[in-house]
Length: 116
Image (cartoon, rainbow, N blue to C red; front, side, top):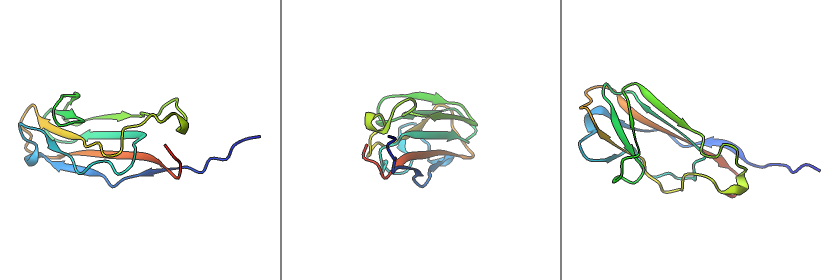
């Protein structure tokens, strides 16, 4: 007997920060996650390398100009495993070079209609 799943793939509105707002200290890219994220996509569409953080203090990884990262946090896990980026997490960015054009974007994807 198979179990019916009531969840669906959903996304939050894209978060963005313009190149001119990316400073030497961490700045939030939009607000905190409204849902536990199962996937995220970060795009650095500025003209310089930036550093990404998930707490605004510690460096997580650099992201080169016109680079991106897609992370399927929940890959190979079921919704019962509770493997996700926590609701309330904020993604931060600071400059390594000094970007003059473009923006950094964060897209968040989550499972709607299931308890995580």
